[in-house]
Image (cartoon, rainbow, N blue to C red):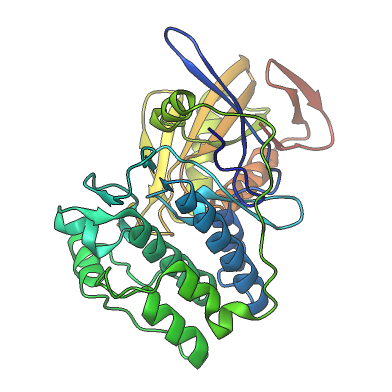
Length: 357
């Protein structure tokens, strides 16, 4: 079975199964997540947002034509290549229509809260294609506005807003943008705009260059694909390692000070590891939620390595925390450290270098 071979979908090259594990060989995408780009840029320019949305719709249209419904479309699952082109990824929650089955009604409620379609909240059957289109509309709104249309600290309130399609477009939205978003974010899936209608829209058609699918020279069989879709991909964490020419206790105090600098609260896991969260209570579905952890590894009595990782979308605070900690670790010390390999620490008398792993 030939499946999902499209320039805007991350390609699965091969699926290898053993008795206990499934290995998926996938296309490498170098540009990172769209969510990281939004963390820096907030909202995008109209041409850039339109290009990404056009590529998203082309990719989703291709998936639907192959009987695949993503069901978890959000910026964290949208990657960008080195040229800024979109690549849809993470099909861990997707549904696959069996050959010969013309029905698209699904029953499993899944997806990320702020991007989920209202019909999924009713706990009834829903059209997978219409649900994906709703998520595309939320993403388009976020690209143009810089924030989510449905957002609140209280998840119940978020769901009420979604069910009623209760949102307000910012004043800089053009009339064409408003009209398209209103048609996509229609709470009635039967009246919601379809992908062919989106493609015909005047705003969408501006500078539109269709991303055509190409012939697949590798056959991925249905059993392999189903196994791949059932596999939940481990969360990808961004990690950094920073050298410290201080004792463990001194290093921990500097981590706490760096957290305070960027308004993070610290929760100690043990004597060497701690987690940091926003002081203000934020729902996990929100773009502004983040979870940062730091672990101190003693190399010598006065030399440590601090391993920092983030497991949520927020990138700006994570970068600010790392920068603050680096500065604090240099204070009151003429000798700082440089990490070159995860297994070794080399002391450098001039600078601290933060490496990403």
